[in-house]
Image (cartoon, rainbow, N blue to C red; front, side, top):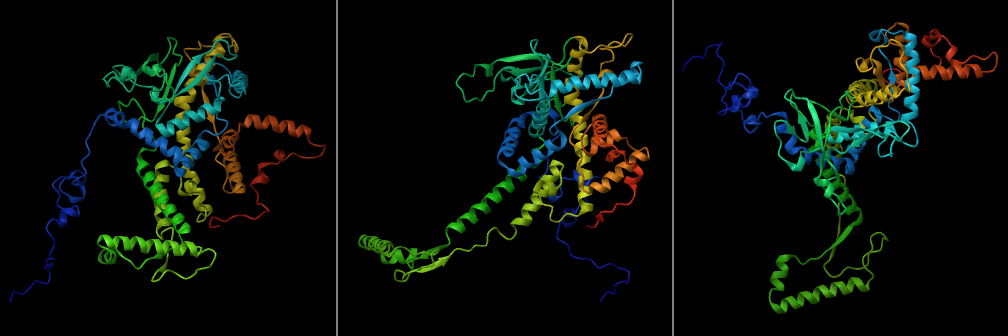
Amino acid sequence: MAVRSLTEVPRIPRKRGALRDAGFGGSAPYVAADTGIDTLAGFLPTNRAVDAEVLPGRDRITARSRDLGRNNGWAAGAIAKEVDGVIGANFRPLLKPDWRALGLDADWAQEFKETIEARWRTYADDPRKFCDTTRSQTMPQLFGMAYRTYLVEGEAIALVNWRARRPFKTTMRVVDPDLLSNPNGAADEARLRGGVEITRDGVARAYHFRQGHYATSWADGSDAMTWKRIGRESATGRPQVIHFFDKTRDGQTRGISRLAPIVERLRMEDHYSRVELQAAVINAVLAAFIKSPMGPESINEMFGDDDGMQALLNYQSGRKEFYGSSGGVKIGGARISTLYPNDEIGMVPTARPAAQFADFEAAVLRHIASGMGISYEQLASDWSKTNYSSARAAMIEIWRGWTARRTAFAQGFCQPFFMAWLEEQIMDGHVRLPRGAPDFYAFWPAYARAKWIGPGKGFVDPVKEAQAAAMRVSLGLSTLEEEAAELTGTDYADNMEQIAREVAAMPKGTLHPAQESFAKLLGPTTGPSMSPED
C-alpha cells in the first residue's frame, strides 16, 4: 500500500464540467464572454445600432406601459409620485440673467429679472389658459403632462406655435408621440428614422407628424394618412419642435419608456395579486359544499347502461327535490337540516392570501421601486418599518435622482420654450433692453438663463433640517435662495416681500418671527428632539 505524503491534497471527485459551471477554467479571458458555461450558454444577446434596438419594439413597449399606467395601481402611483415630486403644481423659472457675460450691471439684472418673472406669471398662470394652443391647461400643467408622457412613453414632444390674436402670442402644444412617424409608414432610413430627419452630423433637422391618430373611434380618419413636416428651428433659431428624451447611446433618435425594464415584473405582480384576490373572494362566497358519495367509478359501475342513466337522473332529481323542499342547507344562518342519504358537508379552506404572498409582493415591489428610482416605502406607502435614519437616507437618494431629472427636463424641454417666449417679449417691445446692450440673438442664452423651481424636498424632522439649513447659510455653503427653493419650493425674493408686508402689519412692539437671529435658531430647542434611532 502506497504511503500518502502529508502535504498531498486528496482528490475530491467532481462531476464533469463542475469547474466550468462555477466559472473556473473557462475558454475566454472574461467569464462574461464564455459561451461554454451552462449558466450563460443560452444568454447570447447581439450588438445592434441603438435605433435598431429601440424603434422596432417601441410601439409595443409604449402600449404596455400605457396599459400599466392606466390599470396597475403600483405603476399609476409611482408615476404620480414622480410627476408630483419633480414638476409639482407650480414649476416655474427663477431668472438669473448672466449680467457679467452681457457686460451689464447687477441692478439692471435685478430689474430685468423682476419684470420678466412678473410677465411670466401673468402668462403661465392665466386662468384663460392662453399659453396652451388648445386652451385647456396652464403652463405648469402642460409641463406636468409633458413629463408624464416622457416617463411613460420615453419622450416629450411639443410644438411652439404662434397665435397672433392672443395677449401672449407664443403658445405650446404637447404632442402625442404616436403622431411622430415616417410619412406613409415608410421603413426607417439612414436619414429618416422614427419620423425624425437627421443630418450627416446626427442633428435632428425636421420632424414628420401625422395630422391625426391612426386608431380613432370616429369614422373620418383621413388625417391619419396626412403628414406635415416641421423644421426643428426657424431661421432665427427660434424653437419650433421641442423633443426631449434620455439619450443613452450615440445615434439614438427616439426615446423608450422608463417603465420598460420593469414591465414584466409589474405584470407578474398584478396577475399574482389578482389571482390571490379572486381566490379570497371565492372562499368568502363559497364557504361550504355538499359532497355526494357517488364518484365517477361508482356512477359508471351502477349506471352504465341506458336504464342506469335513467336511474342516475332519478337519483339527482331526488336530491334536488329534497334540498329544495327542505329550504336548502344554510351555513350563514347556522341551520343545517338533515342531508340526503350518504351526503356530507365539506368546508372550503380559508387560508387566503397565501402565506408567502406578502413576502413575494414586497420583493417584487422592491425591484419595481429600484427600477423607478424611488424607495419601496414610497411605492408601497408602507412606513411601518422605517425610522428617522432610514427615511432620511432614502429621501437623500431619491431627491438626488429627482433633482437630476428635473434639471435635465428643465434644460431640455422647458428652457427652449422659455427662450422662445422671451424672444417675443424682447422683439415685440414688451421688455426693452438698455442702450448699448449686446444683440439679443447673439447672447440669447445669457438673457434667458434661469433656474427652474419645483416642489421642495420637504422635511423628515423640521426642526433639525431648519437648523441644518441655517448652519449651511451661516457657513457660506448655501444661500437663503437655494434653501428656500430646495426645502419648500418657494422663491426667496417673494418670501422676503411678503415678510416685509407682514412686519409692517405687526402691532407696535411685537417682533415678527423672521426678525429673530440665526443664533437663536441654532441654539438648543425646548421641544422634544428625535434621535436618529427613533
